[in-house]
Length: 336
Image (tube, rainbow, N blue to C red; front, side, top):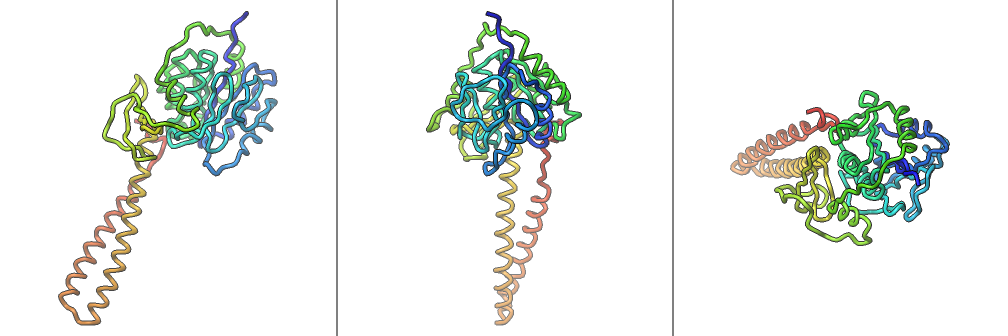
């Protein structure tokens, strides 16, 4: 029996990714001998309109993924909002497991589960998006014998995700979206050997965590470091490979280098806004007390309130300057 081609195609996109997804699906043939699984970063309260957009884009049937359905060639399975999309024993699985890189659905869990389940039969594609979700997953796909392609960064509205994927997998092909469609078609029809199976017990345990109905706490692989998880404030373990750094907590939240920096910036900004609010409240209280002391002719109290008003105003001005200076640009994190 002739070996199959790469019949599992996993695709990830984020900011600026809807149009490339639409173009990609419009260029795929109706007889594609592969199933396509798509993750787009969407908010938890979002709708599943993406499936309708992709269904109208080309000849392949696209629909929101259903838990437990068997993977079939020529179909497009679209991740639902607030659910990770996974592949397990040839079936689509949905999971409300821990967020990865601040997202659910996220690219890394899908790519890693496909690498474990389909091995060399996996083709991974990363389209426009900020930061670096998908880089760890691309590394897993490559390590298990699969192939990786990314949208040409010059063509992307936001090149962060493709650039990060290429850093994780230097052999990844960088192509315009229309050429990626042709690449997928070629990959699906060129037989690949699946004889060499890569053992990856650490990643297997991680995917098993997603498939449990009730996630359990565990000690992740890696070195315990003096960081806390931006999601749950739990202890963080650093995991390193030759191309990527990853941070995982005991609950299972996972962060890449850049998503961790991004999340920590969010946490600092939230803390600064709380400080600003408290200092403004203190100013209002001091002003009321100052007026009361002035009306009563309490000169010693007036001097005290004057000093406190000056110190609080200076502190508020400093905190406001700090808050305004904390800006972040996902793609700029990847230019160093």
